[in-house]
Image (cartoon, rainbow, N blue to C red; front, top):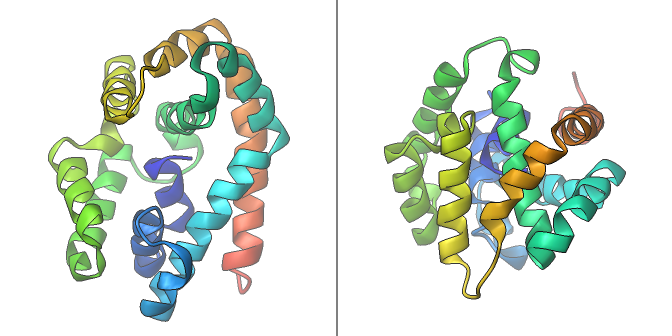
Length: 195
């Protein structure tokens, strides 16, 4: 899952949203340097990444992507999963994608002091370019893939993953729904045990 997936699983808990956002920027045991709620969000981020990478549905989807995008199949799938989630947002939330994005941007803005330097840089661009809402369109997801491809230090075919998605759209969408239902249950059981 990319940012949208992490946020929908942690929203509206503000500390979990913040921790999920900075999860990629906090290494090793450094999560212990944060308040308990944000630290739990960082651990939640790590759990979501691990679960996504190893789930059977994700493995099936990555096997379709791997012949073209190689070792970046997991990166491609994270972005494609957010695209699917954005396109079916009303199936997973009771509010609009636009309202949800605005809420997430506000939550993180109010906790900017907890963001590592790289996280502040990423958040500035995320909010400025409204990444969360951009995931729902073909143009937006291709822009996301293109930008990610440019940041990678080696030549890659990441941009071609969208065409693979279109070719196998029904299958990948079905795998996403199976995966996401399972992930949501696991997250609820591990991080919201009192619900």
